[in-house]
Image (cartoon, rainbow, N blue to C red):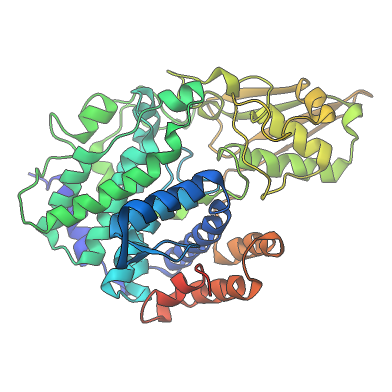
Length: 475
């Protein structure tokens, strides 16, 4: 009889060493760390970021605890991780895996808190992140659309597991304890899609709470209680609860038709190639303060605008073809109608804004569909007019983050362009190039920002993560 899934993951994590990580995996994780730390500085300037910091300082301050980024106050392990997760997610500029999970704001804050408290080295920190990112991504994988269709928001559900694995690795949990950590994380996982369906805001605290729950799962696992090895694939386990069955039967897949994803899929494939095939390499950072699927749309629109320089008034129509799940967020089972029609924060809006202005500002205030104008956002008449001539269509055979654009002019010309879906899978050099372009406009000392870039690049040579944290707290 094959090992339970939790046992396979636990064995992988417990034996994983830094020297086993391919260079591209280390490079990718450094890119994710740099992105998350810079985004936390941006997030600290938002109302929600400030509120999270204030709450934890009031309720969970602890002089010998872990550091709240940007503020510098020490707090409990879970409290600091909660606040830091909020900072990394406040502007919707975190990272994504297959559009609908965001490992960074769960895995990285959990790792930061425990690495700081345990005095872990930079290599230990990177190794723990590799474990958390990889296990979370693999468990989620093909099941993401089906989980969303059950009414659960994937990011906190799967993020709880990623945070538990990262924390457990840094705590030095053995194989049996890691099985229990996963079992507890499966029990603690939560988060619904009703907020995204009706433009509710409760999802702003999904990742912070998932981070805290994952940390607690790992801490409790040290008590050596026996967790269920079949916590994932059991008759009443995680997959049955969050996908509706434990047989790998999927109600929705990312792509359908020729070359479509498996339906059903095999649960056993989630652990195939552990340590040799790395799913975390497919993580994409979000440079713009919007839903992940809008980021490649903005880049593609900006590229075509630059190539052809057609004034907005000369545009007869713009058609944007996208993966069908990207046009029915949060799920085809529960679509948000505000996202499927022209309006502030919709894909139509970002296409129109980018065409009118040539680009979209990464540091612009976050806008979401269904909330109307916020501090004047949306009061641009040229954008308002053009978005009425934008059509967004969902295609079941297009990959995620691989939009295709067709621009028709009033004179009858027609232009096409498209992305492959791989453009946003940045390495450290690309991440550094994009994120450093923002430094001049960030409310943070330039010397510390430059030091952050250098520290991340050399993190595997650092004896601790003190220097990394130090670049993101007041000098």
